[in-house]
Image 1 (cartoon, rainbow, N blue to C red):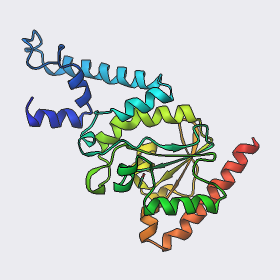
Image 2 (image 1 turned 90 degrees about the vertical axis):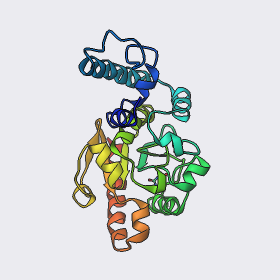
Image 3 (image 1 turned 90 degrees about the horizontal axis):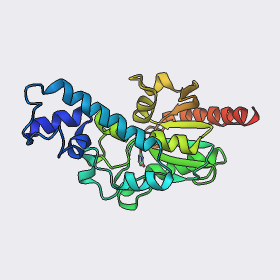
Amino acid sequence: MSRRRKETLRELGLTPIWHRRADSALDESAPSTLASDRSVPKVNAAKEVTNDREAQISRMDWAQLKSTVAGCIACPLCESRTQTVFGVGDEQANWLFIGEGPGAREDKTGEPFVGQAGKLLDNMLRSIQLRRGEGVYITNIVKCRPPNNRAPEPGEAEQCRPYLKRQIVLIKPKLIVALGKVAAQNLLHTNENIANLRGMLHSYADIPLIVTYHPAYLLRSLTDKAKAWEDLCFAKATMQSLLAQ
Ligand code: URA
């Protein structure tokens, strides 16, 4: 397969499907009766496989989900990772915190938010009487480290989306806190910036969702720490009223 073709498939989020179908109708090398009828049937067939992948993931239990994520090759991030970073914490947590993607330390240890940003996240949790692992689950939009700590690309987030979706269904959190722009924009399917998204109650699949700044950003921007504190108070008050319902 040509490099350009591979890239196009990746952008369409079809790369794993191409691999899986190497011996089937989508195999370029196969003497194909589809040769005269290339694009539409291929795309449709590939969409079906995408749906099939999503359907399979949507039925997984924790063990299956963890091992599938650990072996995932659905996007190019698998090539540079040391290991996947699935998530950590209470699997029946009321609170779900979602960041962007693992950094260098997380890639080494396999646990989300263990670097400087992680320390700040732990302090943020403490400030509202929460602790990592106790009623709290922490994960990311993508489970593999994007090289050079760049933001995950849309196609990469898209390939990880069914995993996160399944984690959320299994956890059934009462409240989701999106940490930073990448998490917020991916979860809410919007291009709005944080300033416009914070301070209000959103929802993801009927689960209340609050947006705040990413701890790594707060390490650089002291002025926005006060706003993050407001967001945490808002989140705490929201949880109290959800628990009282
Ligand atoms: N930043 C994130 O968004 N997630 C991590 O796990 C670490 C840093």
